[in-house]
Image (tube, rainbow, N blue to C red; front, side):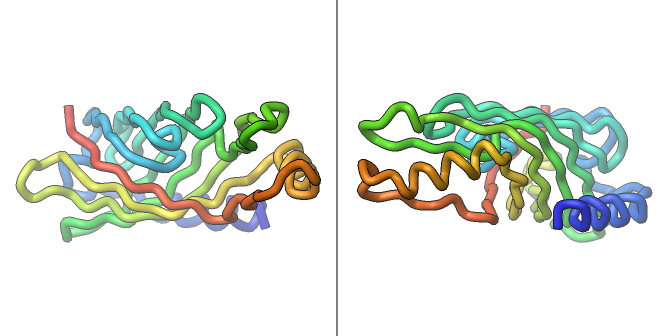
Length: 176
């Protein structure tokens, strides 16, 4: 599954190579965003710069329920004549957390790769600004999976919610 997803994202990325016509996708543009989701460190900030037209290198940092969340990654924007643009992304950093009230031995954040797809909605009023909405699929570590299973079967834990296999991200980004 993981190899298939990586192959799919690489093939799509190689097929897209020309300009989008949106200020937010132009080479050497930098943006800062506020949002929720892994590109924003869970709940936090995202800083991105376009290293090429349609290729955004970013880093995010924020609050994750058991500590600091962070990610670094790359987003590829697809061509569009409309205000909205489809994108794909890949990142590495925190992609899971466990928090059990009263049992601090479970409280931890976990790192790994995450891949996703989404839509940028470029502002017509403030050119260069955009909304970012996407779905992410984290590749969770074996350490996380083991800790999640241990916490869910621990008789001291009265209520435990397993992590979703698909995550959502939403944020607003301002051009600098």
